Image 1 (tube, rainbow, N blue to C red):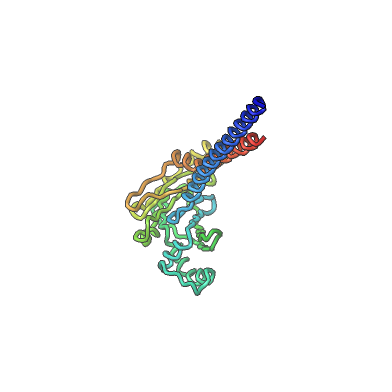
Image 2 (image 1 turned 90 degrees about the horizontal axis):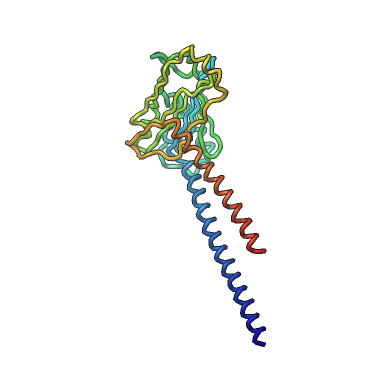
Length: 263
């Protein structure tokens, strides 16, 4: 009788310890999952800065293209509609109404000169894209090897509306090189690209692809403009992917650990 009682107590103690360990591990796993989820959501939230405008200039042999992307509310400000939204009008109808003014603002968003000469766009196309973004596509004459100067005049009317800024990446598609990477604000709206030397063609033949573009995730406060640096920004753009990869790896370890504990 004594042995059976002792055995019963021993089994009960082992089962109690097992249950306690199971709940402790489960609580530990839950805390890890919550922490990882918060980290991943934070990185995603930073990737959608409402004050961010992205611009990419592509230099081809027969033309120059400039692509600008912004949120819909930013486009409304450029078209002079302000912050008040008319809920009785659909977004598609409102976009069609403000399209003429938006085309005018799009053509003047960047004042571009090539070799100190005026460099006006010969084509302007504004479309409403996915995720409530407005895309502007401008086509210019070929720039050749002349120096280029970009002045983001379109940021001036936005200066009092928030810390708006625009990234600018200039890519030489002929030589497959990144010519410039800048972050522009109303206070510092100028980006300059030096003239390209024809001697660079032979050296650039070894380059197989252009460097990845900058991904801006968080603009500083207005009045404190900064300029992006290619190496550091390139590293920062990889961080969200690294966080996601680490999160999936740890989640896999947690999943297999819980299955092992249940066995």
